[in-house]
Image (cartoon, rainbow, N blue to C red; front, side, top):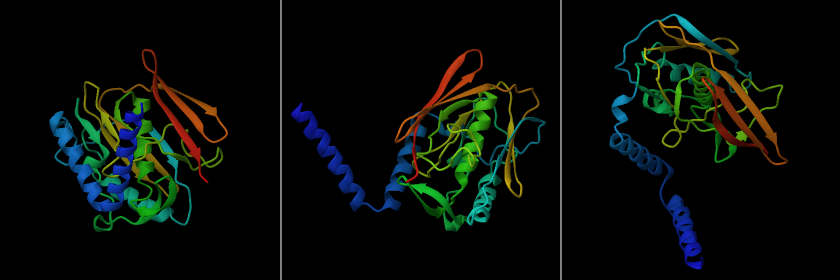
Length: 254
């Protein structure tokens, strides 16, 4: 037991020391390389949707709209959303292909034209390049849940930034993305291709799933368990049976 605790503490201290010694930019590059090698090893890399996929325009099957909160950073958020949408818009996603958010959306930095916007980093609210992209990944995740698509990777936010008056999407339907660390990956488990369309209006973001075949909506069920310092949110999806999709913990913003 003592030996096990010693090894655990040693690993923890080593990890903390490396975090201090190695610059954040280098740690991110190393992590990106690790993910790319894993994708190659598991033969996922060749399944990703990319800019080589055809641009198509199919009939709308499912539409989802979310309000964009008007704040001092909302114009920067809309600007970042425009950049994020460019490579996703009308891109054909073939059966079996994987839509990886960070494989097709440009890296969030100044070089790629992003502005600083509101962002959660290390469980704290701040400003960073690409702030606001999580609404794009979130509406895409919510749309995928409703459509019955296969979710390969998704991460919830650590903090609940909203109350029931300001919340623009059900708690538990969000998807945070952090370049190099947290991705959103969705597989087309249909027998036919589809595409996505997005529209940024003055105070809302619209997402559409489009296909030549009919796509039926799945029923989603959200259950919130309140605790003094956090909330547990469970999400079920009803297709042929009731399936637990996620079981997340959210803490209030301090």
